[in-house]
Image (tube, helix red, strand yellow):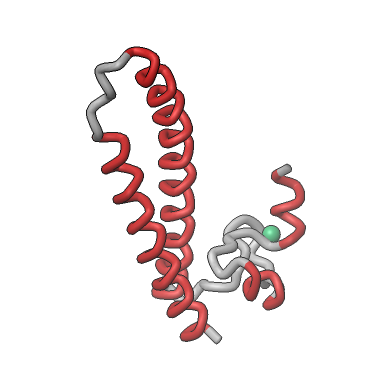
Length: 106
Ligand SMILES: [Zn+2]
């Protein structure tokens, strides 16, 4: 099951890094000199920055999960050490917390 999770995580990581690259390119684009357009683009950039932060967080959690596979602790809750339900891992292979700990986070 770890091998399957690893493949899924690697695919996910590649996809996220691709998205991160596209966001970075969009952010690097010079603003339109037309000022009315510029306001719109600034707003776009705000949401792009939000997306970039989100993607960076997802990349970190996927990398964390890959690291746990390496260290043979994959599937254990990083907080309480309990086994993370396989059903939960099937939905979110990068999950670092068991269901209980994750629901306490909110
Ligand atoms: Zn836990």
